[in-house]
Image 1 (tube, rainbow, N blue to C red):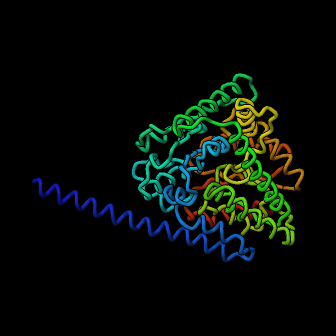
Image 2 (tube, rainbow, N blue to C red):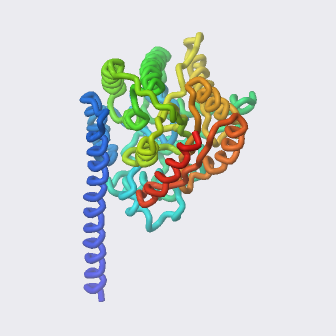
Image 3 (cartoon, rainbow, N blue to C red):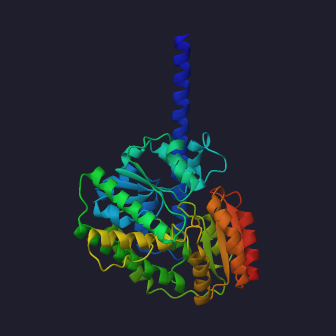
Length: 417
């Protein structure tokens, strides 16, 4: 009887091994296929090669740590301030996933309509055989229910997990005070984890470092507005943020900007704004279909693209309290995540950007299972139409089976602009 049980266990292990090897192979092929598609574009530049090398394989915490030669802090949302982690000599990286293939490893124990981005992350987590222990800290801002329940679903040790409790109001004094308290709790946690006290001088240097990156990103965004940089390449570049040392990455973006300034502006009367759920490589499906339909992505407010940076930190008080307060205010008030109840700034930003850059319509990217954006789409559609902007919601996931249907809808949408 024992021998029969052992034989069964060996069979299960061998079958699981073959399954992992197959998914590993297919996932690698998925990444390389998307890289090949980008390289075959007419607007490919030699400067893009660096970014493609960062994107050419599934994310691995161990490989990134070897590259940056620093302990990692895993962030599940850009609400966690980069500057604070950098001041503790930790390398922050956003934990997410864009692979359709790798979801198979996690599909058996996850809800069917779970957020594809997190389902992909969890599948890759299994594929890389990693754990939260590969990070010095794992930070979960409470921006959505999927993120809040993630450690429980993944059955991970929560010793180095920290929740940033995000107030869902921005403009009240109470919520701002609560968020500042959360930032100080984060600071205290990192002091405990690293065994270092936060030094104001180091924090100021980190603020200046991230400020420089924001300035560079702003210049890159201007090139997108002018048509010298496509929305597809812009998103590919921003997806590599935090996948290398920040100074190295910023230097390469600067070189790319210099090259792009010599490119001719591409005029397109069908200029659109993309809003909604995050877009993570290798899932650039919607952006590629938008261009295929003959429209130009002039602007977006995607948190994995233009919204990756909240803007520069403005402060006069160089004390620890003064700088942490400035960081807290910038990350809280500047954020237009749909998790906030008082979020009229998001719609106002879309309207003002559309007016300034002659944008005719908004394409709303909705990942199936992404409930905050699904709810928000109702309000955004109504308000944008009141201001004469065309609106279309594309609900999809990481699969490509619906590509032709989406393309047909986008081509019809273009005719309405």
